[in-house]
Length: 323
Image (cartoon, rainbow, N blue to C red):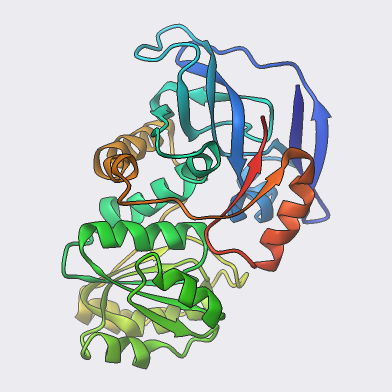
């Protein structure tokens, strides 16, 4: 089968196509014939630290048809349409752990389904599991046009929260308003606290999702309401350190947490997927949430898809059609 590997060389990631045998499922696994996969910035750009080595078969999410079922897997059969987090989605066939299997909603295309698992489960972790966002509260998304940013806006609207987002592009903010963004702030600098306070009648926001990085961390703290929560999920700015105003954390009873799969055990991933199925999948099934796919590339066009992600030109997800 045809596959595409992410290879780290001189601290840069390159894509390399290779031929491999079709994988065989072990106990607790299935193999799917991949129809579509999607790109994720963390996997493409972070490199060997997250990969666990100098190379990795790419693709953390996919949609497709069940091709083979391993021992102990129940409730699913060959031919079923599924989607979820996988190991090696940049391939014609991919392995999926049983606890990651989700049935593809009929109303979603293969490309839309492939755009869901990583970004939307991550958004569930930030908004439901740790952020505990409630109806009537407010959410600020830094770098709101990213896959996780778009998913977070959509989940917050399902909950009934008010949404605020930042982007360096007014055009992106205008597109985001069509999917539920209430207030857009056009900036790439740590200068948004005053605008956020104005948008919240001086109160500040209840939950912030920071996918930008350390350059905006201190400003995020200044933007939080009493008992506010701050999630760290990415470093587009490549700034990995920031000062913390401990007095603000102390007096404001603030909570700071990170969301990453780099060290999360299988049990944690299973818990997140189960929570997503319970809280979010119904909204995908009935159309309250429609995944945002910015553009679709062919399998051979993966390098061009990577270039598109490098340019940060997208709103939502970049998807690759495999089968």
